[in-house]
Amino acid sequence: MRIAIIDLGTNTFHLLIAEKEGKQFEILYKTNVPVKLGEGRINDNLIIPEAFERGISCLENFSRTISEFRVDEVRATATSAVRSAKNGNEFVDVVKARAGITIETITGDEEAKLIYQGVKLSGAVTELSLIMDIGGGSVEFILCDTERLIWKKSYNIGAARLMQQFFKSDPLADEEKNAILFHVQNQLTDLFDICEKYKPKILIGSAGAFETFAALITRKNNQKADIATMKTLALNFDDYIETAIKILNSTHQERTEMQDIIPLRVDMIVIAALITNYILGRTKINHLKLSTYDLKMGVLASMI
Image (cartoon, helix red, strand yellow):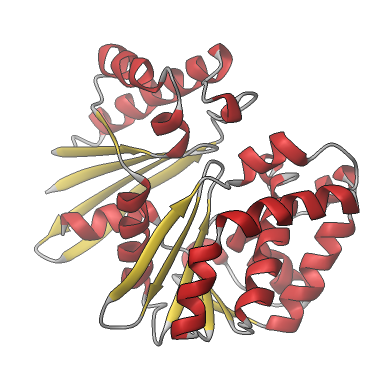
């Protein structure tokens, strides 16, 4: 059976096509497009016309690819940007009319559960862990071990939201960093309570910004690692901190010239580094791991 999974993220739309037989699967095709659905007015809970049209156009292209691969089943999930937008339902309706794709707008809780299933499928969870997924609209945290999901929650502190609200100078000014951290701190009280109780020792970053951190670290160390082909990778804590500090102190132009930062992430990686540093400090975690499997792989896991 051939299945297609579409993940409509706030920044990026992903398409994955896989052949499944029983509990086995083979990925036949995958791509992602920087649609930037949350551009401009995500904090006003609105998809602006330009982003609206980019999203529709992308999904029309995805629909053609799905037809070419003769897919049997399609599952499309929309997350923070669509679920919080006043015109999110309108976007879903227009996609159905123009691209023939039925979108399921999932809750933050459902999103966190699917991220957990994806990360678990990668084999990254080998002990009591805190999973972190930094999206454009929201950030999900999942506390888990090899046997069970213990706790999960989605917070509306995604990189695009924080960037639009606080990121005004180049490089990011100390006052802006402090304002972001004050905002984040007030949001994450229950996360720190649960971490104080269970004391996870490892932070697993789910794809996205963590793939960028991993690529920057491997290049710094002259390692030959193809992030795109691996499921999981341990990251040296000191290397991460050095890389994060470099990102936080850099200008937009300097980040543009860093080979491993894609254009979409040039500014948002600053927010990601700031939040990650804060989480590591508050939870006293000093072991990091990347899982390249994320929500879309969680959807695949749920289908097999």
